[in-house]
Image (cartoon, rainbow, N blue to C red; front, top):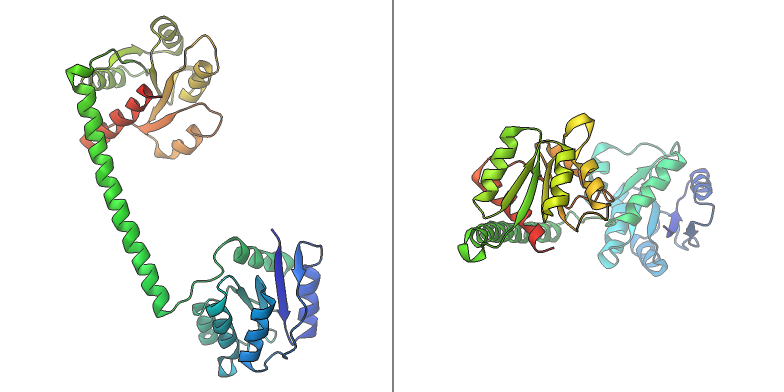
Length: 303
């Protein structure tokens, strides 16, 4: 990450300290402004706009809201510029701090600031939106964006529910009764029978196994298109271990591997890149989760 930095400070020791933090070629220090710190706010803003910095470190002067006016004038024209205010005297009160942050200041620095903290402030500005203006227009736009996102999410949920019902209908229709062989691996007889019954209702031909060795033999003999495995298996092994044994062995034809778990917190680890797992889904416990389960298992038929 590189950035252009403009330091416009009246406190020489603080300015020298911050310049030292920026030494090393990663950042470009812009030439100082001609307008002195605390000079006319319009002239200061015009010079900053002409410099086009990524980050401005500016004296915080509360009198006549000078610093905030400069920030407003610059960011009205160039929203990409982020502001860090310097409080060299350390006397800024809560009211002024609140006003500065409400208008979009990214941070405040004081003479005791450490290098890591200062560079982190710059990184936050450069890696994301420089500021959100807390203005009437800004709130209105944010409200409209949230409303639009909510409407889109609602439509997506409706379409998803309809798609899940359609998948269930197509799977259960006799004209689509061609063999759809799946293998369920679980050391729980209840789990095996529950998933077997559920999937047979949708015209899957379901094989079941209680252990990994049995599942491997069935997979070699019957060549299922889809394997559904519990996460926790015998001998301390997991569904991810079994998936890797199947997916990375040329003896087995390409298949779609699903790990089934009751633990939502396990999903990120199970789906980590390189595991070979195609999907990780929660065990069905309601009509809606059953529809989702069948729809996602059925993805294996088109891959």
